[in-house]
Image (cartoon, rainbow, N blue to C red; front, side):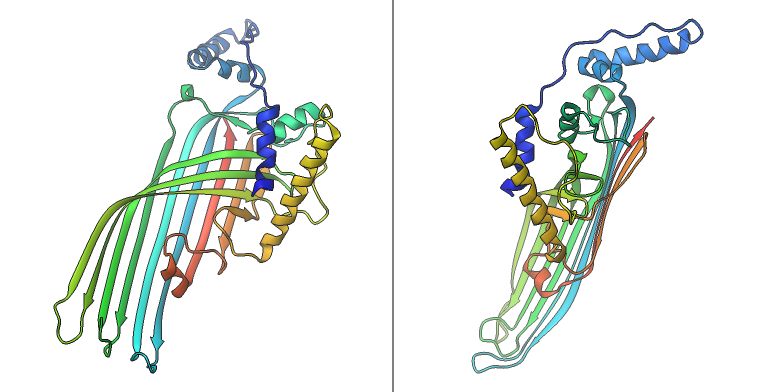
Length: 340
């Protein structure tokens, strides 16, 4: 993962925040009323964030960032164990189900053209490759979001000849919300066609579980109840299908940097590309995914990631998910920028 984040460490070295408030152009007489109304709105918004007006003067537009997230996993299995010299026969039944759905929509500023992500000028290209095509400001209002998180688990174990526990039952229920659904990074990809993104998903849930065991010889059942709050954080690194021919032909190196530094940067990118190429046959981990698809026009950028298969590791089922492997195993992510 060190190689993967090298490019993001370089951002901190190169990136210089724009400053200064640019003056607005004068309106013509024929559209003076409309212009004045629009400028009044812009000035009100910019009062809380002067950088907002800089972006507007550079041609950025008002728009919307919408994120959709849906994870659905479930599994069920019955395991029969025959008698051995050490223990009698046993039967274990496991059933679990996980679903997370969330949407988040907020008003943002969007760069002038979403269809031409990488300029030919090296200085501008370097900035674009390390910057997001949208700008978030508190002055633009709070995001609107809705979500639901649920997880259930049922475990039943029967071992009639045991001298410790002839029957055990475990039930667990988890309910909550997605508190954060944040696009941390979004930029043109060096490793394949289109864009790459980092989506941060944070959940907060309340979990209730109980375990009941029945000892042999008509013993009294023993029940343990447990309730606690739980928070989970999932960073999704989403990449396009990796190139087979090498890095994209983007001017991603700073000509003012020493050759040794640029060689190290290129080497790190090539290592990342090789790692992404190996993911085709690897389990689908929560931290890194390939197959992100991009559709771009001047006014809209849509990124889609969709997974359905048997390689995605269960998020919340733990060891139970390894015994009762998922029969339903899907993940869908949509990130959409739309200019007003």
